[in-house]
Picture 1 (cartoon, rainbow, N blue to C red):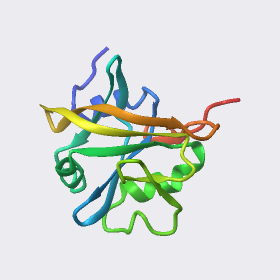
Picture 2: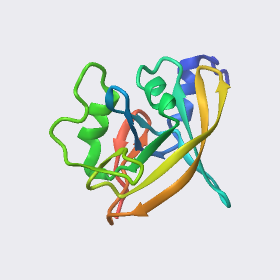
Picture 3: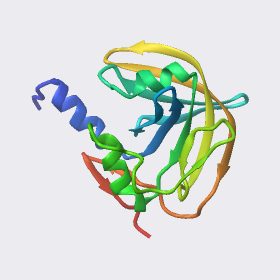
Length: 160
């Protein structure tokens, strides 16, 4: 079997691994900023650590990184439109939605499945992304529901 090893084929292969989707938000000097991430994972329970990856081409990540901390909202299957808005460029990502604040002052979707307040620990250059390891300082599971799933370049739902 011959496989052409290209960036596209690598991306397509990794897309077969289903992931959840989160919003990463912060209150920056220029106001609230945020982006979507599906490269999010738990790292450690003791101490509580998470990791995410941010593309070097992101225009939002530098503003979040500068704050030294951020919030994560775990998205439900009802948040596909929110996710699309936060993945788009040149739109007001925070308009028309209900937001609350974490204890650290970062914006959160009011109806997310859960949230974390995180402090950036270490950042590693990893190819065309930065690998961010952050300590979770506060968190809460807020709503019951099914997560927003991303698989093969599309949003999907869990079968019940």
